Amino acid sequence: MSHANDKMTDFSLQSYDGKEHSLSDYQEAKAIVVMFIATQCPVSNAYNERMVKLYDDYQPQDVAFLAINSNKAENVNEIKKHAQQHGFEFPVLKDVNNVIANRFGATVTPEIYVLSPERNLLYHGRIDDSQRESEVKTKDLRNALNEVLQGKQVTVTQTKAFGCTIKKVD
Amino acid sequence: MWSFFSVIILVLTLPLTYCGSSKNSSASEYPYSVDPLTEESAAKLIQQRNGKVLLLNVWATWCVPCKEEFPDLVKLADYYQDRDVEIVGLSVDYPDEVQSKILPFLRQHHANFKVYVKHFSSDEAFINSLGQEWNGGIPATFIFDISGRRQAYIFGKKDFNYFKQEIEKIRART
Image (tube, rainbow over all chains, first blue to last red; front, top):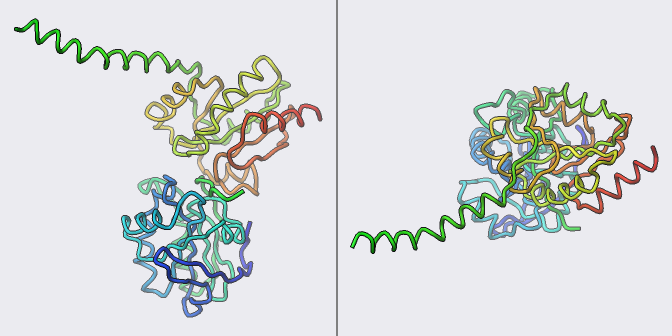
């Protein structure tokens, strides 16, 4: 499992539209949000709208968003359809053979990593504390991003929640 | 004329009636109640072993691999019936989904072991109490020895033989 301040190595993955994205493309961003998501996981899907709102709120503040799909059974066409259906404007990258999920230590969807532009891990965990938006008490990812944007140290660097396991290649 | 229509309606509805009743008869009653599990009752369940090894499987009705794994847990509970091993399920669906989701699933799969539904003040605290290395992904299975010590953390879908082997390793040690 990754821990706060771990330096994450750069990667290069293709989004469903064939564009190559690397972490190093976002050195000018104030933070990079890497989101491991799925098309079929009901927990990940419960957060589709919240992910869109996060992007709408923080992308204008120079926060970059990259979603990654590492599930072996979810192909590029399915990822494209899902992204378009839910209005994802952030890139959704296909992690073939779950290489990047393994490198990050990601095991579940949705699972979030917030990195500094230098790729140091600032926050790792959930988006918030309830699959049901009406029952959310702590908006952990927003709290972390707000602190980063204010130039503060992230107070809660690690959180957990129940989610779907990433189906990986054997 | 009316009797002709009555016969037609009867003929058309008979197969539906038959399908309905056969479906009902294949779903057995679940022999336990699905009680809420709090942090306190979870600790009690783990600690009060009464000489039995505990296999605790964390699952949910929204989790596909959990549902695929479930029949093997039923088989396991059958196998260890009347032996010193207790199989317990913990559904991390919501408590208000017991009637609508959990019980129908348990009946459909002829569940033969006690299943609880999570009722934690903090999911995260519970996840950490079972394992710092566990990120909350399910299915996840934990095996505790007769002293309530965690002896195995099993992440992801497994089968009857895998679980049995893990249980037997722990039984051999105690």
